[in-house]
Image (cartoon, rainbow, N blue to C red):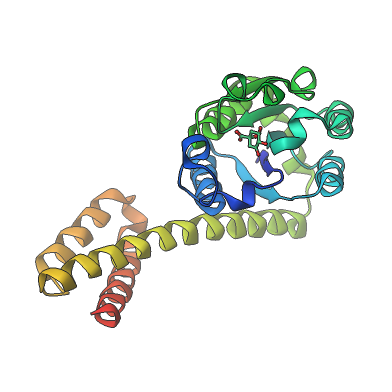
Length: 247
Ligand code: DQA
């Protein structure tokens, strides 16, 4: 499986506290979660990295060689003057798409120039978080070499231990994605609990739970359908418990 690195530079850790006019109101975590979900859709692994430091960004680019297949980079203010980051992008030979939340061409003059633009395969700016997702799509569709044949032939040569290690690694990635979704679900539960508490409505609605279970049963492939329903029952139990706590 291919891996995309989502790399954010200085001050992007402060998203949510920066000017919403340029950067929106979401946090870096929201942005990274959106990229992870996009990764599931595109069938790629997603790794996220943020640093305030030029040196850490450069080292991360170096260490990505041979490990990462494509990079989405928002270098923040370094975009406008870091020749060192430019050199790292040039030497790594990994396709890098430069991304900016804001439209750097329609802001202060000093933001109009990007010293990394020429060594990146594309620049996407002014689209907010969506720009990262568009960049991921472009990496997959256009810039990351497809090596499905390579992967199959190398699979044949792998030992059972190595195959197992690969499968376990895939499971770890899936668990990461699963719990991002779980966390998102619980956030909605918290909001629902608040709405219900304010309106004096009951926590548990059995007909709604039955409807969810039926939907899950139909949605999941035959052999996993019962297991999925059991899992959903446990999720519903935890959701009910959380709503009771927040009453
Ligand atoms: C930015 C634009 C840069 O000029 C600025 O320094 C940032 C964020 C953007 O995402 O719009 O920190 O890269």
